[in-house]
Image (tube, rainbow, N blue to C red; front, side, top):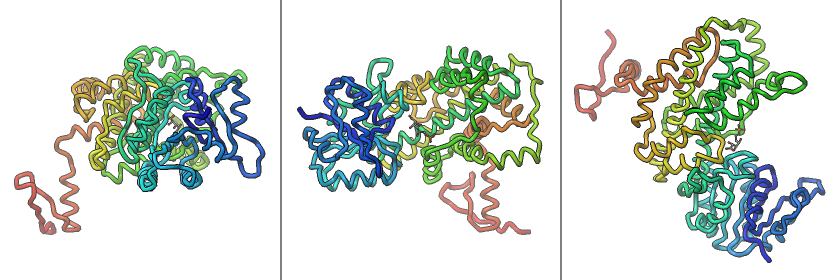
Length: 471
Ligand code: 6PG
């Protein structure tokens, strides 16, 4: 009896997806190459550690793995993004036939996926680039899956992916055909970018509570718990509560963790893409920059010694500030999502991908890292407007919260606290709602020094003007 589905790469994500699929009684084959100079049979070990799966076969050799699969072959790659994917594709190609389906389930850069899709199309291989979100637990119990590429390939593997995906509150799988080419990986990239923003906002809010209001971590956890009861409920906040309560050797573990945030690229790629498409990307850019600054630990220690990093605390009426902080957090979250979705809107239009934002929000309501009550609301909102910030509900919310966000940012800055994402969120928002900006001055300056010309509000929009500015 042959296997219906194959998974290559038994890292954390590959292994978890394999066990998830094996739980659905699907016949599956798993494969992992030998690490250079090592004897260890990695796929076999998965089987040994998880006995009782008679429907799962493990291989340390590629050819027998491929021979164990029914035709058309359905193979998912769960290997590191980059050249490893190209190398694996090349190794597979001699053994693949027209109509076989290959899914790249890693965090590949979407332009690489577009290239691979074109290359494999020539060879009549049905290629999909699929974003998979949810970390280890999501992969094991149900991730959100964002496949793009060959629609024909999607239709062949959808029955399998449906079985392993998380379910939304209606019971529908958190899986959809996102769009052609690299659209699936593009959408996953933006998911991660929003993830960076959401994480950084929580970090800023926590930091203000801890060091501006001088609250103990367990108190902060308790406050976050009350926030979780309402509209602010979201997975990243939920895990933060656990983190704020995790003790080790009688102290908070968090306090022993080096304040240097790592990144694997997706957040920064989104910023590059925003630049490439001319999309304003303020807060989500700052979330990446915050990680970059954090990584300069030694430099920060020197600078903090030179400038004195003393921060003023405890001068605020606690309850009143917490109330404002809660609203500021809500506003910043809406703006984070607005920013990410507006990048998707622009890129979708330019590439004619026809991304369905309501459907993307729907598959992000469960399984993935940025699942939240807000995301549930976005499902309905994007049915009515492709621009979140122009939807009635967002207008009502942001009108209600904008002063609180401004206040919190003002207080934070005045008292020596960096709040890069909160502050760029309010700047982004205020810039968006400014009908008449100072960009006319920029145009005048450009024309002054470079004769770049400008358009006038009292003339035809197509007409260009140049002025001899110098007296
Ligand atoms: C997810 C995560 C996952 C991973 C990212 C983020 O959606 O499950 O986004 O894909 O955690 O790679 O990683 P970095 O923070 O290292 O960039």
